[in-house]
Image (cartoon, rainbow, N blue to C red; front, side, top):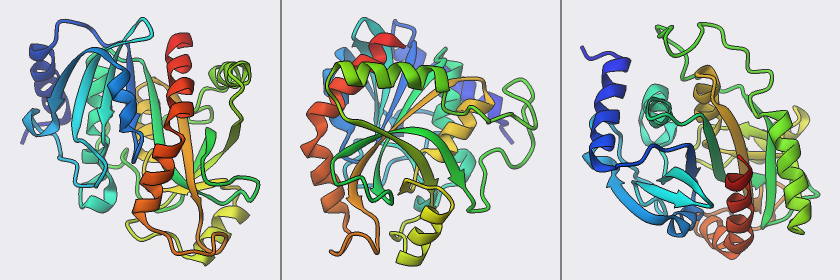
Length: 273
């Protein structure tokens, strides 16, 4: 059976055979946010389906490819679309791309997502800088044998989203006149949207936004010593707060509506990273 390091190295070798640059920063783009990849100059696109051991995106609005090139003076590798536990993949499979980013030399990853707001001071279109996360679903991508060359058996994730870098992001957002909120991301596995009772639980435990991605990827990145930054686009208020029915079309539409502000913010984050 091929072990994790062998799979990482095979995926890395394939990607490196298609590019002649070394990525410095990784961008993982959530539902409706993949448009940012169009900002990348001299792009090289690699379909996930071509890469050894890679899953394939099955969610509407996810292109399912890497885009590698230049953004604001840095060489970036962007994931247009990610993988989710609810698609039937294991936690190790959905976080495998983060492992490969590290193998390629990426030391800073920006995770973005579309999320539901539980903080009632938010509204559809709010951008939230993630300060911490909550995962009480009973599933972790670090379960199973630990590869000590990648990270420790018991990693310290007390500063999983770099507080010092977050402070800089907030300063830059203010300079750009972007009303960037802060908050805690509460992870649910999905694919059903959360019930009103689950949203009340998330609020009670300190969650400001709920979503079905990001937390596993952040955990694996932290395990390998990568700097992690997270941005949630609050596309709707969560069940029990929003009075209309929740649907994926609304998620994509609201993300599209704020994409100009989102792109401006991410461009500045890449600049200062």
